[in-house]
Image (cartoon, rainbow, N blue to C red):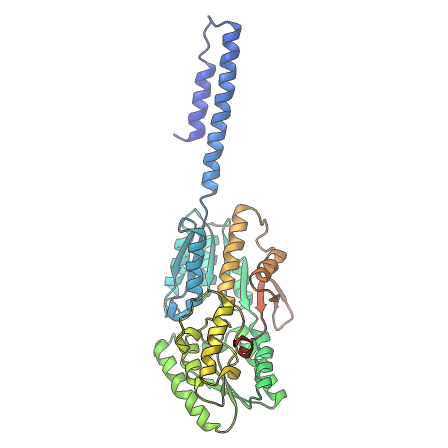
Length: 407
């Protein structure tokens, strides 16, 4: 029996239980008892309602450690912070391009749980838009908050389906990367990518700006097509290609300073490793700038992913110094993809609890990123036509000089 119905029957019974023999004092005492019992019932009922409302859950879908360890560890950190009773996690397949339906089904499965009030997906690989649409239309979950981090679908597409979209400012990295290369005196810039990535609007915008800046600075731009890690050769094939191609490029451009950049996460470790002992090879930043993006593995460091950023940067600087490479590497001072998940979960919790009342509260989004990454430049995305997408936020940080982290 529902608690409200049970309490209604009890109060009805008490009201009907008076007898003709009662005197005034007895009636007053019974009335007082009735009022006290009613109050207790109301409190108990309301506590039950509050308990139901407090049974919120946030679901987080990330890649595996082979495709994006930072996002995976950020999801683990959310569980450690808020508990398994509030945070549910899962991963999408490594070969997500061929297993889009699996990704969609996992997101829809999250939404089938009425206690889950928000979904955070990072990286939001293809399938996010379709799943979010299905959650809204077929499941009728208009109450849910849907957040896409590091999307791989075009801004206009994913922003229509998600309430909030968070991404590094890829386009403006075309400026910051080239500024770093210019300071190093780089003469050749090698850009590793593949057709799937180059078809993405934000990556294409960064590539165009990199080419433009190379031309302005007199740096030779080289577009090098690498295997897609989601293709037939898989992650291992793409990584092997990088390990073999970097030395070949250094031989081709012997005597010149050559900077290398790749658009893919799984290629960062082999690229960092291949550059390390090549004195004229340079690494301006990972695709997802962070102290933890491949550096621990490529340098053989015991660094806790998502730990103290300064300690991590100091450890990287010391290892680079052993290879006379401190002035040939850079990154951002904070792990942006991990911060995206941290902010998304924090925002979701505040929205569920009513502290934030808007699905897209611009001031709160900016304040949360500033709190996690002081100095972060948070802006709304503006596409090539000059249209501003008000629920799509980009984050930009300044590159680090590892010389500043040597003891």
